[in-house]
Amino acid sequence: MDIFALSREFGVHAEEGRGGDFPEFLARMRGKKVMLLTDENTLPLALPLKAALEKVCFVKDCHLLEPEPVADEATVGIAKKSGDGCDYLLAAGAGTLNDVAKYAGSLLHRPSGIFATAPSMDGFTSGVTPLIEHGFKITRPAQVAQDVLMDFSVLSAAPRRMIGAGVGDILAKYCCLADWRISAHLTGEKYDARSAALMGEAVRAMDESLPALKAGGEEGIRRLMDALLISGYAMVIAGNSRPASGAEHHMSHFLEMDFLARGARIPLHGVKVGLGTLVSLYLYHTIGRRPAFAGCEAVYAEAEGLPPVARIAETLSALGCPTRFSELGIPRETFRAMLKDAYRIRDRFTILTLYCTYGFMTDEVIAELEEEFY
Ligand SMILES: [Zn+2]
Image: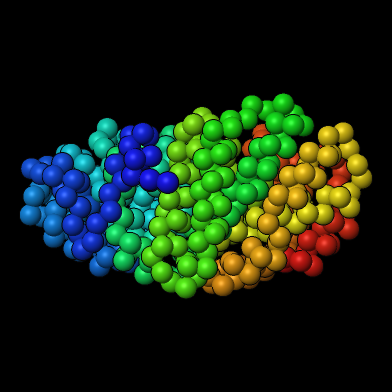
């Protein structure tokens, strides 16, 4: 898989460099006015790139002082004000700053890009931005990043839990693809084989490189970044987020709204998605214990193709991520409500929709899940 050639097909310039040396990107920025969006954690990592940019163009700093900024109206407002009059908006960061730069860029009609500092989520190449507005999480259309700059010495040195979050967001795709196929089978939803094959191949390649990733080598991080970028392209082909978002993402969104309502700090996206993946896998692997239903053979077949819950839990745990919802301070009541109601978040059929609408999410099943994962 040549991620650079593939990215070009989707209009994204992916470039690898070290110590701020990104020749193609820097040549394009020559003589321009570039806003550089950073926070306390990412500024030190971006200094070599900043120095390289200052040799060829005017750099306007937009430095966020909060240690962990969130993608809300206030942060977007700061970036938009600072980026006004600039030719290009570059974020140095991962989830939040990427979201803020591409949304501010689309509001200002200016291209944007990302210097990725952690392989923690799959939004680098997605065309939408999740934002918090008036305390609610909403998804706004935004532009796709024009450039994704990767220094693998920086990405490999990211905090272990951020790497674990990225791995969780990718391992989730096993369930997303299974959810998509069972929906196609049971509800007749349109299924795009090319999108699913591209995503599936990237997940397997990353999964196979997990021993290398856990050992701390760059090779595993490369396969992880491949999969994180490809996730965006698979969504472009499908025309929606189906290949990258299933029941585990609905569970994550449900929890996020609860964190927001409680005014609590929201844990990393991939960390919550990893937990949701464990629940989805369990629901698939135990479907044979539930009453038979029309079309159940196809669901049994999907379950057989999925990895065991224990292997995914061990992987998440080895990368510093929780394997129980209580570890994130989620109230027991919220966990139970999530199992019963998270499927309502999107009108999209998943293994959770199947359990909840076919009468399989009984008190006994909820108790089993609580025992396993709470
Ligand atoms: Zn995700």
